[in-house]
Image 1 (cartoon, rainbow, N blue to C red):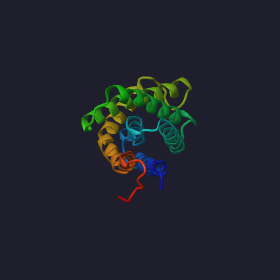
Image 2: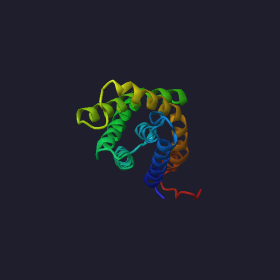
Image 3: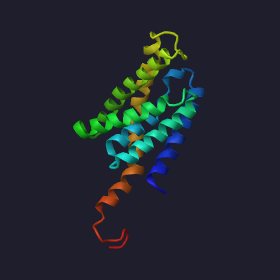
Image 4: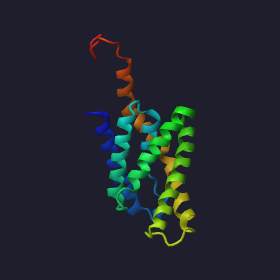
Length: 177
């Protein structure tokens, strides 16, 4: 099974867990967004920009379907986050859980704010811009809290296959030494 298929399946499972948390938690705003750290990971680590954009688009499309939001909202956010994290990753990439938490915190703050503002502009689900803090801040904190777990999961699934391909010398069949 290809890396892309595994990422999409994990994204769908993550969205199902996210949807379940929305219905189980008494405070709906305190649910994390699992797909956003996955898209950040792709932006920071996927060697193929084309594959990363396609996976980000598909994850955003799935997110739109699960969220019941206007089609294209989360797709736009996912691809934008991918492109921004790709640029940031090339310029200031650091490793470690602390970097992942702070990067996820910043990106989630910006993307959640954009989502709330777009919904306000188009007259959906947000009556006042004052709700921005009530909706965005808890989601930002919860998403940043799950970011190290999501990054670790993506490392375990994604990177061994990519690094194994890079390490194969030319002319050597994989698995035969």
